[in-house]
Image (cartoon, rainbow, N blue to C red; front, side, top):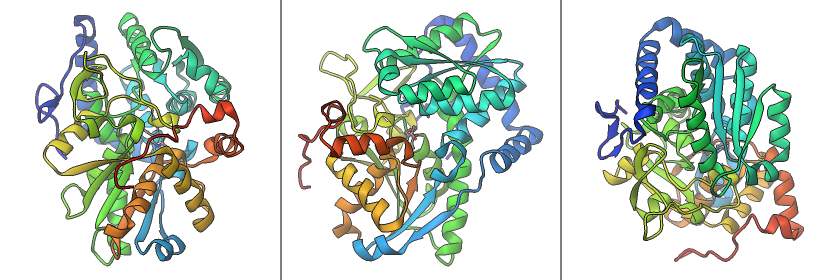
Length: 401
Ligand SMILES: *Cc1c(COP(=O)(O)O)cnc(C)c1O
């Protein structure tokens, strides 16, 4: 996967659709990243952090029980075993290290479910940086434990009260803070989205995931690669990370979105948070709220490079329902002793649904995170708790499933 063009585009997607006031901040960041990324000492420091702080490389696990049950050979890339429990640590270590190099000691971030906020607060604590995390008021209430975690890690959580008081409002407020304090502040964005250079930079920080997975697959498959590589897609960072290792191989690439947030599935381009990509919007161009059982995938858009990969037919994007996701969550726990996060349960849910067409094939699933954070929610859903049931949509059925 190469660089975007000079205007930050992947094909017709991406770019830098921001107010005049944000342009210099984006340019300064682009220059800072370019210099850092071509500097061997920065690369070495990043690799050292990934290894000795985050615990990389993460292993690849062969799932014999599940493979027998499905008739599909299943391999898992174990991002759930990283420090803080997901792939997110790669990106935040890269960005906070860059902030340090750029002489910025205050980190600003947005968070939806709280996972990116916790990861950013973790890295900021490690580097001794001040950390301010914006979070929608609705999410602050839903994710009280993550708010406490961030505070424990020394971050200040600021409640975003505008709009729908969820992730997209938190992004807006974080960007506003960044412009107002760009001399001292660094904006640590959580996925492969936003204005150029974020989609490209965040992909580069997650590239390690795909590189490891390619080497591990070759070892495990006698020099071959999996027939299919599948990952869940919220903004798309874990998916782009693993895809980057396989885009030049014969592996088919599949991104899985929640049925209630299928931005690529609906194929309507628009601008959200500074870049042109596929997103969920109504007939008047208003951005729709995404809805799914997994708060980590509740984002109405998808990173621009995914829109491009869909456009050129190199990756395809599928959707699964909340019911299928909860079934997959239980299945992996029971069959392999691995409790997955609800997000990567989407990827497994797609494999289960398509097992007939996948018979005899080898499928690599990116297990982007562990399920500890989701256990209480799933328990409450299964117990029929009315508040927990509000987080699921059991009414959506997909054609042919
Ligand atoms: C945040 C998160 C995601 C969604 O973000 P992407 O940028 O689409 O990867 C997926 N899985 C886990 C475990 C997460 O924490």
